[in-house]
Image 1: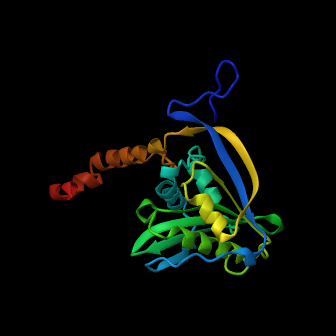
Image 2 (image 1 turned 90 degrees about the vertical axis):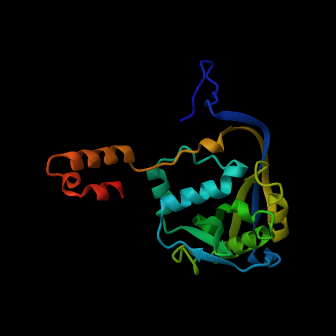
Image 3 (image 1 turned 45 degrees about the vertical axis):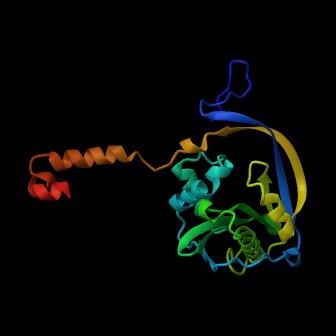
Length: 236
């Protein structure tokens, strides 16, 4: 929920700053033939579809990839929100691997009428600036055009692939999208309040401290597990 000042205008949270003049772009590709390949990275990069919906995985990747470029729009999401987001057949999450390490990820969604949105795409920081970004966007877009066959098999074919980006993103992002064949469909300039990414919440379905306290109390009760265990086992 957004805090409101006495004058009725939105008030910044304590950890927010307002960034003026943020440019927001909607970009689109209307034909799979418009996709232009990127140079191959120096090391093989593989892409795996996450077949088990996991709010923890998507939240972790959201932080790992997006924190340095102010991905904060989902900070207000609860664990239930994340669960509802990932637990849909029309959404696919892909994990990129290189050199035995998670190198990035992307989320793509099959929408009505053939629209396919790239919600998120990006590299983890260790792989930024090493020639992986163009190939990541190419492979993400290629898979977006493969909806109805490779994923979201009941959704039908894609007729348009689109995404949103902004001037808060990596400085090379727009050029990368243009090189892959995307064009600007819409542009807006806004003043955007941005929370401190260093203070990102980690949503859970419950407070683990409460359960830990309950377990400790049960174990400490006469005849409980703690009383029955050797002292050495409590330490380990």
